[in-house]
Image (cartoon, rainbow, N blue to C red; front, side):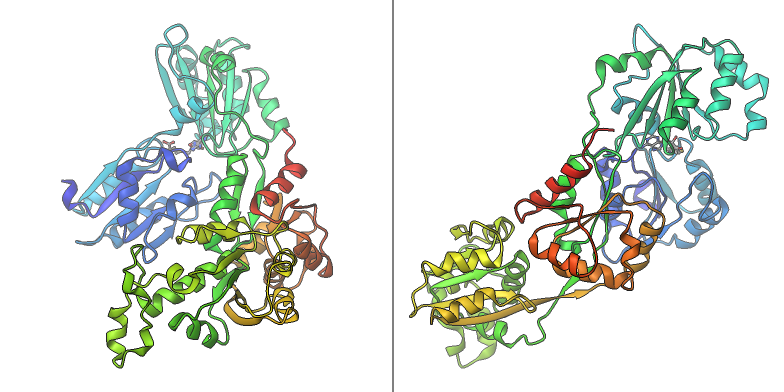
Length: 539
Ligand code: SAH
């Protein structure tokens, strides 16, 4: 019975995370242990709890990271009453997934298990190529075949004679290596040379590619176009329907892999814009946020916000860390502030009472009442809007110089300016405020520090040539990337590098790197535009 299951054999679908079942997602979110292999999207793995134990047992056709009997043993070892072990498999667990063997092993050990079927690639990959595996006028059956058998067995007359005459659609999985033999054998046993064939590579993924041909041409075409695993091979007249039914269209960055060096909490917009264009995205979070070396100015301001005329945020990180500090000082601030919210917390004699007394204080009310809020650019403005601060000015150019220009014309000498910034930020805005004779409340809210745990992954990706591009959304990302490469800029020689704006470009050039493109506006969309402009040819 499922309620008692300790191990779940879960189908992750063919790649697109949206094609996973609702039940499958729930189980990934609950899992104490996640055992997964190569064809499972990293975005699905990311649904697991932070404390979930993740075990990668990824198999490639050439190299088994863990032999099957060890995977079986691992599942038995991890299973325990009260613990949820999720064994995630690409597609459906019982379609060439060796899920049957894993289930047998669990049964042999008396371990209760349940199976969550998945959308299988043998149907989904053709579907995403506009090929229905059956069709009233073209095929009334489909046969799913493994192409991974060893060639000696492949040439056994019985299999091929039957397959060549079974009729309907044939779908081969794991067949890329043996494609020439598959095609030859089918023709040798009487299938017409001009039988349509499609190869669907990375079906449903952003980088899906489709190649169509006929039995006598397909092997050469695949070689020429460099199609590889994972691919399904579809043989039969349904393939011709693609001409009419293709709907999942290749996009301009299809087949390109773009690395992003932003901190993990900041990747989502860049990732989704790139994926929208068909790119495969690889994350290399080279930095993370840390407390400022001197947290006193931030702590002092948030503890007792004093009135200011201007509030300037020079990054979305600043917004995040400032509000977080405020909430830490006052408890989470619910949207509905009570009218008494403005009573100054520190006037209370009893500090313990403070925490409760000002729980309804909201930051926009407390700190920004009557102030003009300035955000350096749209991402910062968005971060503010998400926290209830909607009336925000942004400069014409989304950089410190733009903020300085904006203030220059409007700031009165008797006014007070709260500047929430990165610790290592340039002093352009602070200098301008002081120059005007206004009072500066200078609050370094965070520091960006090097994050080293991705060092190997980054170096590997560059050494194996698996990246087409690498993007930098800040100068610190450039510096930290080079730090992870131990200063060896040569590793970046074969990758197109993209910069978010003139400052990041200047840092790159100082460090001996030549950008292939720079954002026309210093925004994430601008950065994506630069990648598109340079790599976006449809090939
Ligand atoms: N259980 C899986 C199949 C595992 S065998 C399922 O039901 O889909 C691995 C093979 O599946 C690959 O060699 C390839 O032929 C196929 N495959 C898996 N995902 C694929 C995808 N997104 N696009 C094309 N083929 C895929």
